Length: 91
Image (cartoon, rainbow, N blue to C red; front, side, top):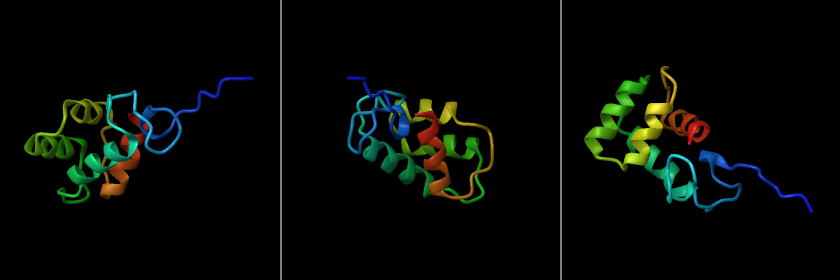
């Protein structure tokens, strides 16, 4: 039987609630998305990667989230959901 190596959001194994092995370390996918959304909700949109990084610093988010933000592309984000969706691609 072949081993299924599909990846879920944020780079972890597929399946809700699974541990994320990417930038979020031991955070599960649901909690990782919550953290990025909590940070992103405080921004005024459109917002840049620098805006997101500054807000993360103000909120003293976990270092895994700071690292993930550093990997995200330089662009304007239009909503907290947009930020979270992009984070899932890089986590």
